[in-house]
Image (cartoon, each protein chain N blue to C red):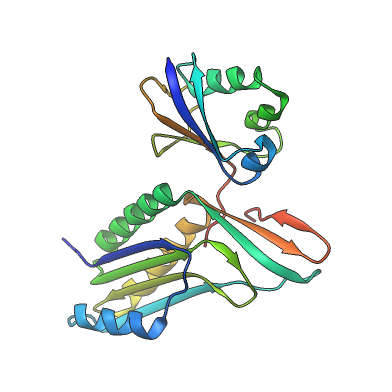
Length: 85
Length: 141
């Protein structure tokens, strides 16, 4: 599919150990991307959401369905439940 | 269409008096102003050293703008302002400011609560409490 900028926040950033990275990916939806990243290293298993829900935003739009297409996306962010206010 | 919507995601503090002065210049038809301030509190069972607030700034700003638009339309607001801070904050430091203004008070109160409820779990901010004994990411209760 091409190169995509991945961004990580909060607990996910801490576990993966990076705030962002540019990655060449093949996946065309969020679910497949998480599988693809997991194959790159154990630290990415945090994206499976076993300990807490994992949200994602594709080109700065929050998505709720992991089957959401990421074709043509330039930036994908992963983060845990939000705690503003 | 209301054009008095002000949204900011910022590191610096805000000043209530100057915000009120700005508001008064733009809301001559409004008789009510509700101001909500969220601030850093100490913990029940530990001593907070500081609260670290992380944000996804661009997305947070657009999410807040969207909810302010909704609130302004739903409650016919004359003015709505949200300023949310990020970075390292100490006990009693300000975190968030929500100002809503309308002709009468009921709409301002309701809109303020609506915006705050939304901010709690729909806008990309994350809080980490760093205390004497522990440090942990805050979870929504």
